[in-house]
Length: 209
Image (cartoon, rainbow, N blue to C red):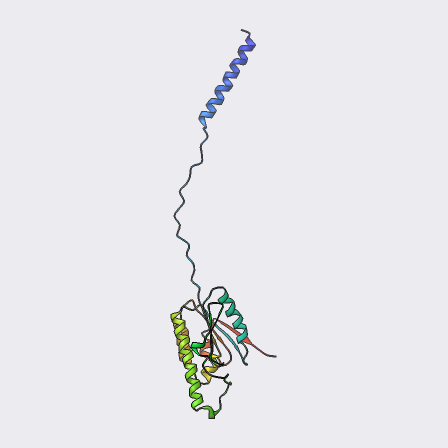
């Protein structure tokens, strides 16, 4: 056989053997699956309720709060609105208006809206009737707050109701201290007592130029 053919054949064999050894030395391995480390399940953080005050020197801070309450109810929150000095026809706890499916709107069972100051002559049967209606509404609000797990409760003109002697200031403070931790308490109107203002997380004051 020709020496050149023998040399080519030997080189080919050497090349094939080298490739086989290289393949056997580093065979292809599929990536191994690693165990996923144990992790705690995600938990929803509970909402922390706040005491918010919308106050002014005049009667007119309710409309802003009403729009926010309607928005919250539309998004699924349980909301209660109580206007303590605004009466009307067929009002009271049994005459509540329900909006957005989750908002309950209440007024006392009196025929008219009460003024900021009452005359001495009004300390009569009419005054007792008004006091009874407002106290009945206040008791209903406290009951709803603790039984219905409200997300938001709006107490409109409660400061004036306190200054007129219909509701006790200490009763409001006790309600704030003992309400569910996730409930927002929103107080609107003038004459909010200083001790209640000190409890607020947020205060908004409306001013007229």
